[in-house]
Length: 169
Image 1 (tube, rainbow, N blue to C red):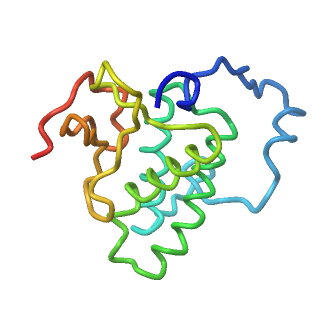
Image 2 (image 1 turned 60 degrees about the vertical axis):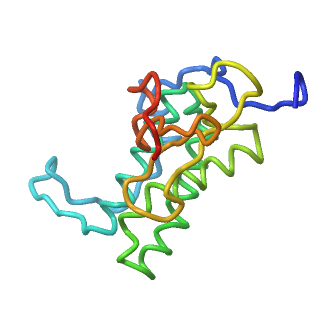
């Protein structure tokens, strides 16, 4: 595929949202039940299932931010995936270590449907732009991989810290 027929998800200049006034804060955050935290004197720990979901969210958001595509509508895609994967991991707790890769794949699929390929391969400098894949598809320690060059590019959550790739064999 050449030229304009290739859709890619590129960084866009987006307005910054500022929550500087209480009125603005009220519009974006609904009041709800008080959550116990270090700020109100008690600390309630979260379980391993919830921790795996928080970690998956953070890793995928880090990759989106590294490519400067963490716009509000894209972050909503991450949240939608986390909600769906919460049910999944509640049904199969042993799969908690697989959640980060699954959320990354969910977001990648949703972005492809709406905007185009993401994340684009930083290793292959020539030819058609192509997206990285998550490997293993269902397993621990997920990585972004370029199948065209046959290299691991970065761990999920580390796209902003790598410049090249290592052999995937």
